[in-house]
Image 1 (cartoon, rainbow, N blue to C red):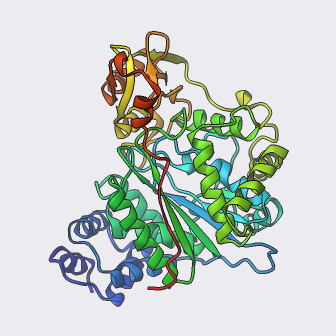
Image 2 (image 1 turned 30 degrees about the horizontal axis):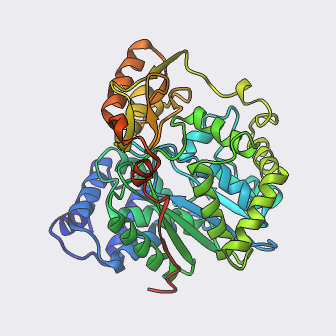
Amino acid sequence: MLPQEIIRAKRDGKRLSEGEIREFVAGITEGSVAQEQLGAFAMAVFLNGMQRDETVALTLAMRDSGRVIQWPGLDGPVLDKHSTGGVGDTVSLILGPWVAACGGYVPMISGRGLGHTGGTLDKVGAIPGYDAFPAPDRLDYIVREVGCAIIGQTDDLAPADRRFYAVRDVTATVECLPLIVASILSKKLAAGLDGLVMDIKTGSGSVMGSPERAVELAEAIGRVAGGAGTPTSSLVTDMNQVLATTAGNALEVAEAIAILDGRIRDGRLLEVTRELAAEMLILGRLAGDPEQAFARLDRVLASGEVAERFARMVEAMGGPSDLLGHPERYLARAPVCLDVFAENAGIITTIDVRAVGLAVVELGGGRRRTDDEIDPAVGLSEIAGLGEAIDPHRPLARVHARTQTDARLAAQRLQSAFEITDNQADNQADRQATVPPLVHRRVPVIQSL
């Protein structure tokens, strides 16, 4: 069938057969489906949706468009985490080495930023020399020896999704549920996992928006993954404020390193990473319950073993061997820094996190087009959170920019992104009332379709 006829059928709300979907995905892989046809198909699915069997067929066709990795002979489970994306979401850089230090193996296939959200692939791209696209035998060796590797989609892993993923970013179809499910799982199922944990964001900085939509995605992923033989559980976590204190690739790498080496010992980024790591240990039967999982995670982090795993991974992937000890030597820094202050002192009650993320994109830390180059140095640091007191001594954030003009434009967007009450609300109870829980809900494993 011609690609345009498949697009027409979905445009008209018809259900596609498994054969039609496989034929269209084969065209994506081979290049016979044009870029504009792929964009039209994405929009047709966005507007008319897909039934469960269509989503399963799309997922498996995209998985089977390339190589499916096997891991014979490992002495522990092969595990991974995937986040739907957010601002300041630096979890993966800490999580992979953390789970590896506890006996798991983590071949983490990561993606670029989508829309206002940052991508793990862009973050490791801020590390000089880091080769996120190793040959298959090299990846196999690193995962077996180090326990973890954060990579991008190589040409032979779900190649259909690689092309589809880039088109979604520039066609306003990022939020489409069936396409999200198929994109996530085609990559993850190609990695040969024994278990997957989803971090599904909800809130103003999330792709999914409401908690109800986040749970809907969690359940959809659980059903499709379970039917494919990969147990998957999900945590619905909060993105009503920036997860870390930084947003921007080199800045986020530096914050992850500060957590790994013990300079940062608390905060939302560390807390949510710990929750997800515990979920992975339980799913991989490396811990029997949350209490046991947390105890093991805390022990290896305090011992320095997690930092050591991270350092070994970076070196094995071609990065500097002393990045952990001397990040300032390697991570790019922007020439202009500007503190952004609110017009009035008070307590932060609401943050438009999407607007914060777009400020980073406009600085050059994200993409407007698929072929845009990312500037690893730009971004935000010292980002204030919900319930925090703001005054002339505490800025909303510090902008890191290439030019004064860029910095001032970002400052204007940031000032509009924060809603602040006056100081009369400055008491602990009122502050806590503005802060949603970090973990909204756990969605357990769904065994089958």
